[in-house]
Length: 106
Image 1 (spheres, rainbow, N blue to C red):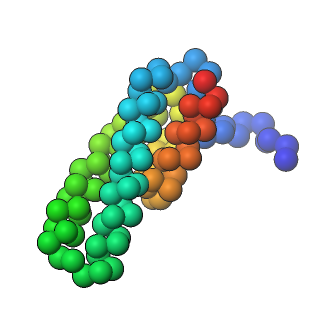
Image 2 (cartoon, rainbow, N blue to C red):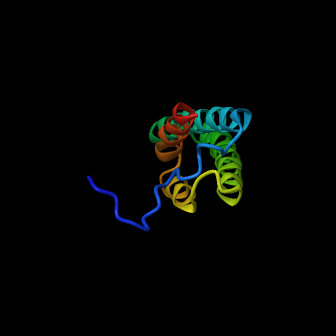
């Protein structure tokens, strides 16, 4: 597929961009958030209210921390704001593969 001129890919500035420790921290945070989301969905479906009361806020805090980290990377120009929007909408479904792709491009 031919890229249009002026179109900017999601991970445009990776070549000289994000330091490896930043990417590693975000990858771990993203994986932890994804695991908490899966656990939260499981306990919510099984109607385990006490577990939902614990896992819900834990997932919320990790998700906000992940958004802050991805937003910081976008602000530094390591990737575009489109990646931030994708993570905000899709959560770990976007961040886990996106951060893995960034790690492999380094």
